[in-house]
Length: 56
Image (cartoon, rainbow, N blue to C red; front, side, top):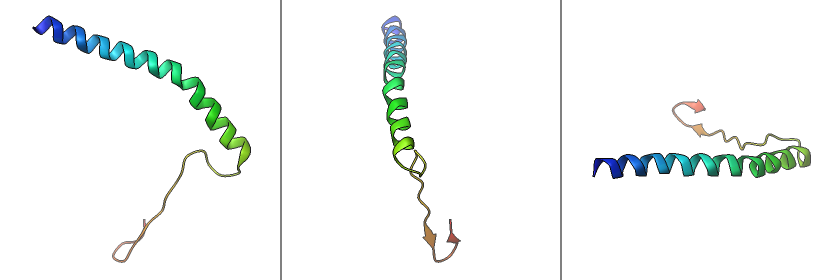
């Protein structure tokens, strides 16, 4: 049983790594397209306001 859990964990890490590598190129292309299309940041930033704390 312990060997199966270890194998599953290794397989989970391997599959996750492969997906990360495969999806990094499309995400980079999308980020570049957003950056070239608009003058803002690629990542959305949100600022909130609290009555007690003011701007956060």
